[in-house]
Every structure is written in structure tokens, then in C-alpha cells.
Length: 167
Image 1 (spheres, rainbow, N blue to C red):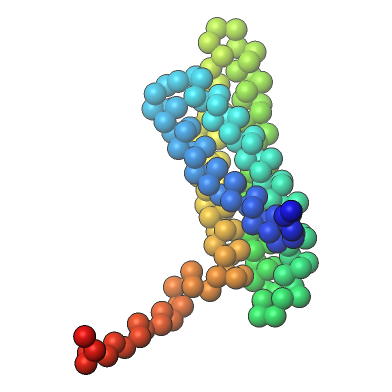
Image 2: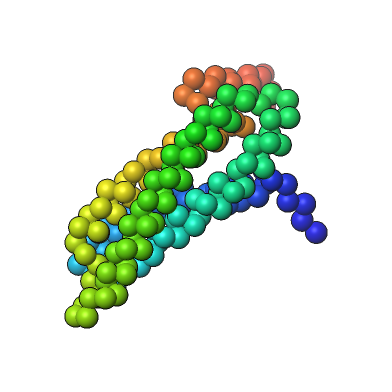
């Protein structure tokens, strides 16, 4: 029914960490503004899910890389740059997934209000900013592999000339 290739699978899953990092960071900021322990815990769960999404994206990236190396017009250097950026993003995501998990465990052990530790939340806020930045850079470099139009130096073609004599 569906013919999923490794590049197709990678394209399907690699958007989750990118958009997810923006959503989780926004949720955490909103939770901090509202001073909602429940929303903070949900945001921490989001950081854990981002770590899982980064793992799945990385898992599918190797197969996509192997297939794309054989496609005419694809520069291996772009694939290597994307892969290096993805490794950074993945590692940052893993670190803050663990920090979030520790925060959830500590909150669960808090008998009064189950509120996550203030410093864990602040650390996740800083980590969320790093995640958004590294996932955005990784996505940009991945886009350059097949989408040169996202480069600022891409020459935009002129619109076709119209014939003014036709009515």
C-alpha cells in the first residue's frame, strides 16, 4: 500500500522534534507565567517526548543518509553538516529529557503540591531555548540538502514577461 523509503520515513518523523521543541518551550513559559504546577509537569513530559522524538529521527536519519548519497546532485558535505548538527540537537534533547525526568520524579515525591523544583524548571527553560535553536539549525541544514531555495543567496527567477499587445 505505502512504499516507505528511509528518506521518506526520516522526513515523516524529523518534524516532531522541531515543532515539538517550540510547543514545549511555549507551554513551559505559559506554565511559569500561570504558576501552574500541572502545566509545568506536562511541559516536563514534553521534554521527555522530545528526547524520544530525537531518538526516532536519528534512527531514521542513517538510512536516509545512505540512500541520499547515491542521488545525483546531492552534496555529501551537506549531509555531513546536517548529521553533525543533528547529533548536537539529539544530545541536547537527551540531556534535558533526563533533567525533566528527574524533575518529574522529584515532583512526584513532593507530598504537598507535586510542583516541580524551581531550578529544574529554570534549567528546562534554558534547555528548551537550546533545543529550539539546535533543532532549527538542524532542520535548516537538512532542508539545504534538497531545497536550495531556502538559502538567502538563492537566485529568484524573474517572472515571465507578459505580452502587452494581447487583450
